[in-house]
Length: 209
Image 1 (cartoon, rainbow, N blue to C red):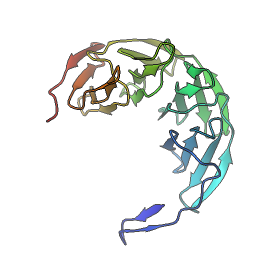
Image 2: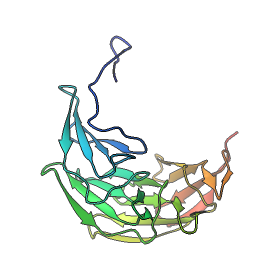
Image 3: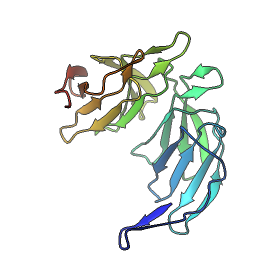
Image 4: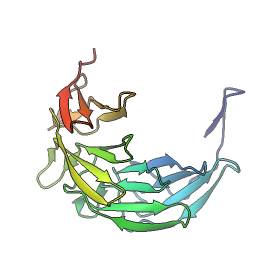
């Protein structure tokens, strides 16, 4: 569905080529929206054209996945990280180039994870936090930084509290606020923590009511 601010109404926006759940949708610099992966369609991607309200196929992913993240880099490329693949939580990372409609492999995560978050920092690096692993099932308290300039990952400190299915928001200060989520099957809806990129450290934040 699409919304028009002028009329405050919803209109049909065409149908997806594949049924999807636990996928990602990212607005590209071109104004198109790229849908990636998801259940029942894990290795497929499709583009939505906001000018014509139509869908078209994008090149298929090298790695089928759901429960992943998709982050647009400063270059305009899309960084697709982790998620749940054929063997469980995956450490694989794929890069999509909208200019050529092609995928390429990027350096893998240090730790396989799904249900994590990925946030592009002011530096252009991408902060990946928390998530969930399989075999054994457990929430994570680790974080990693991706540097697009060198295609490398580095440690980004240790979360104060393990978390998956949480949120991560880049603040005006440049810090990242993690809020809520689940840790080892226990919900902590009021818990929050802050990441400081300049110090590469985590600290507790005021809890929500």
